[in-house]
Length: 179
Length: 308
Image (cartoon, rainbow over all chains, first blue to last red; front, side, top):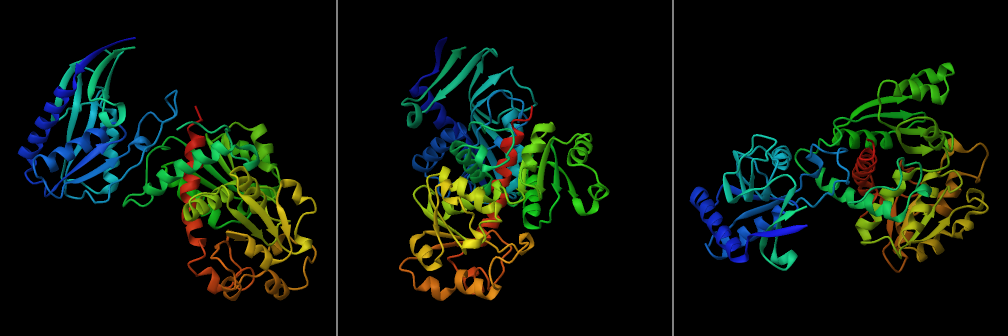
């Protein structure tokens, strides 16, 4: 197993700030926009972005929710390992809101398909956008593309893209791992 | 999340403490799901479940059906009263006929103890025991423990007394197994005639004095007197039973601590507990009903994940 650094800590920080600015450009003061981090790994990106938006750019009253898509996945009973559910915490209704899904790696697009179904349990959003830190090009199973992307990566199926976060893995970095 | 150690839920006797914790953690997620504006997830859209009720039931059946529908399973209902069982068909024939219609899971209530175990050996479908005679009622015990965990934070180390008709109660047996597995202390309390002779071999305390039992416990699970299963008289009169083993507000106020009151339903108001007690904050009877759906969703989801 070999691994290569795709993004080092300072690059991750620059990218997060750029993504935060792009969100502000499109959503202003976030009066009608909510951020939804997709569990489990998208939650780290969402919480980081929310912190940057609040502390560095003075965005107030930012609504952040975490959505678990386990029960909406299309591979129930089809995977070798049992699916593991996480906590959903959305304490607001998304009816007529602009929803921004936030995830760490966009790969096949199936998680996003599941999230699009799952979010409907909380109302009918006005529109839904997708922000992803890493976009694995050429590996989509569904016609899904991000509106905001941190870095586009070309990786073959035998490779894995792993994002590390300081709060969980002791460092901010993105690795390409050859299985 | 790991997997259950079993492919059927036939009784608490057959599962492990780890299984119980997995069911509870999964139920926590489903409890959040059923608070949403749309209380449904699509996980089991390709699973068909038959609810076979060879014995009357309202709440258990309704609870199972809701749980199945909230997981998007296809559901068929069957009750013995309106079926060919009346014409003399055997249990295996009845179930095999239903399975021939491509059913993946069977939820069964049956008056004979062991009916679920028997069926699991002869047919190819996941089986959930929804009560087999006086033997076990595993999902009731799970939702009871889940409700204790929700109210008191943990089941381990808690003192639980099960009061009433232990002899005829599948709820009591399943609860004893479940509570002991999780490290709770259990006492049974009731008239001598309604306590099985060798019950202490299950590691439970026995008392015939309600006051003493309530003073000892953190939680009292009040069982219904099952008149329909009593072929002889086990106590002189309902009035006398209520006086000796019924919980009243006055009795609770005399205790030096506030205990939690549970009841699996249906309640005979004024017999096991008075209306005042049933409707008080100490009673978690309606929480038990609400948790029943989440716990049954968890059981069905986890068993379905093992159907390949």
